[in-house]
Amino acid sequence: MLNCSEAEQTTLAGKPDRPQSNRCFEIIQMEWKDAQVVKLRIKSTLGGNLRLRTLNALKLTNGILKDEGENTNPFYQIAATPIPIISSKATSSTPELKKTFMYDIATMPGKIYTLTSQ
View 1 (cartoon, rainbow, N blue to C red):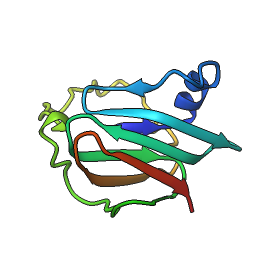
View 2: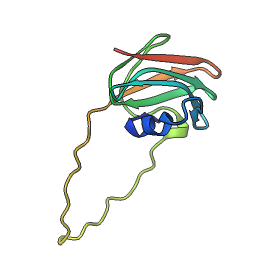
View 3: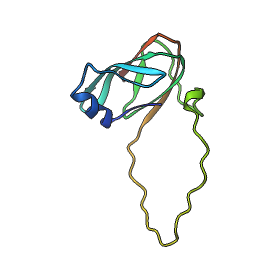
């Protein structure tokens, strides 16, 4: 999964020409305005499903976005983990999470996908 968050904006702010990547996908361009992704260009290296999470809604200029179910890309399967054991004496609070938008994009190797804000 690629996560385009404010942390990514901070990371890229000082190095706009340095692409962010993993073994399946490479972010080749990311433009921000007022803490929102304005334009995002991603190159698929292996193809398959790209699951993308952003803080604002995006539209894909060359393909179809969907956002449902488990990620079908075998590189990003989530391993089953046991339920944590929490002491009855422990106090915890649920963190406030910002609303996110999650998209699945069916990609082909070597193709570049462009997303823009809605």
